[in-house]
Image (cartoon, rainbow, N blue to C red; front, side, top):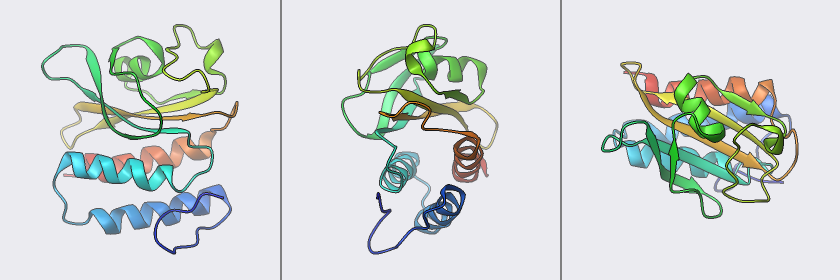
Length: 166
């Protein structure tokens, strides 16, 4: 079973585990203003807390290239370096600003296979305090249908609390 950090034992139930990890993330990041540090910490803590998290990280909106995401802090195998808005699961989340919950990535139109072992995925848009899209948070699993509404609810909450609060 994946464990979060240090010697903290996490609950087995998914919602309770997310609640505990959310509390730890908030505690660790209290007072840290740097966006890269915040993203790296979120990716690391979540990746190390859930067994199904095969690839976990951020694709940032590239201010130098309109309509494109560039890989940011992540945990896992090599990720795609750039993804156009509207392309694949991450690009769709960026273009629509809506969480994408994909039980079978091979059935998703235009899926980009950064790693062929990926079977399911959840991608959450990340907004800053002004409501502007700054990134998407991407989690892949080697297991089909690994993510559900509990993952959506908690990831949206954690990312909102971490990046959207002024």
